[in-house]
Amino acid sequence: MGGQMALRDQFVRRWRLLRAFEQGEDYEAAELLKVLAKDREEKPGAGRSWSLRTLQRDLSHLVQSGFPLEGVRKGRKMRYRLAAAFASSVPEPLRPSEWAALYYALSVLRKAPGNPFREEPLGPCLGGVLARLQAFVPAGLRAYAEGIEPRYAGVIGSLREQARLRRVGEALARAIEEGRPVRLLAARPGEPRRRWWRVDPYLLGFEGGCYHLLGRDAERGAIEAWPLQAIETVRAGRGAFQLPLGLDLAGTLAERLRRAGGPGWSVRLRFKKGASLGGVAAFLAEAFGPAQRTGGRGDGELTVRTSDLLGLRRWLVGFGPEAEVLAPREMRMAVAQDLEAALGRYRKSERRPEG
Image 1 (tube, rainbow, N blue to C red):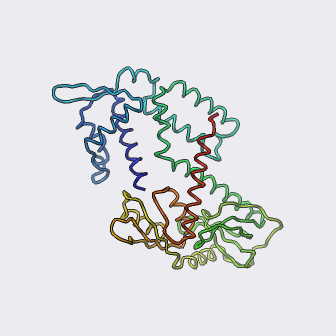
Image 2 (cartoon, rainbow, N blue to C red):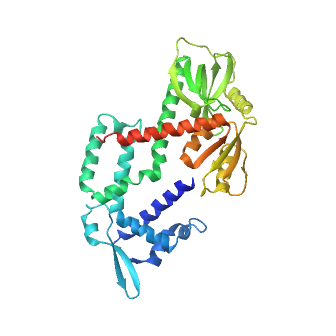
């Protein structure tokens, strides 16, 4: 988490500097530090102040990224500005930062699953638009725009997750309406691994901040509840089913969720140096269950008790190698497999030619 936040802070700072320079003004270091501390002016107590050394590093990075900054000495102070020749080379009416933002936004739209920009007839049209943008945008600016993605890699992952949940929800709603059984690849609260279930789906209900499926587990003949996020795949089954007469679906769902919210599992985690353990513990306690710092001072260990192991597992993958599961062993192995699969998908997408 610490590394991700550092990358994001870095990107936000450099984007603000670019936005300031493209106004055509020149600035001395003290003025640029105020630009970086904009959050503190708008919301007292928010944001943070940055050092002169950090500013100099950011300016150097902008130059290396292809933005020609000029240093002009006025008296005893150095003032910085964006070279006029570069500003005039960027096609109007957009500014350099606006071109970069548009270029990145279109790239995200093309990669996002389950949207019309990947299909006929809009897909080829969008490809043509992006090709034209590439011809207009200076090479240095394109490289800068493409460098945005590592800072916001979670955007693509979030879009994929939303598309998956929509597909799962639509398939379940269709099965409920038609009265047909389904096969689910899913994990219930308290179970770290997914497995296949044969289910008669009764209800998709919203409880506790998310959607759940209420249905009859054919293997045990018991009515159970599954969080929608925990359902990976839905496959249509054969035959039909009948709803039990007089069953209060909403009341039964609420009762099953209360029953599932027992003591849960204890998960021991370690975060790399730089993570704000106090903030992480507060978030875990709010989202998953009681959490506290454990181990010796400075070792980065936390313990959280939760019944939503699959939700915690998905959340941990967002940290990448900066978060490590120490126990239980089964959870540790499951998160390691998730990370390996996620990295494999990113490597494949990097090799895939743009078209």
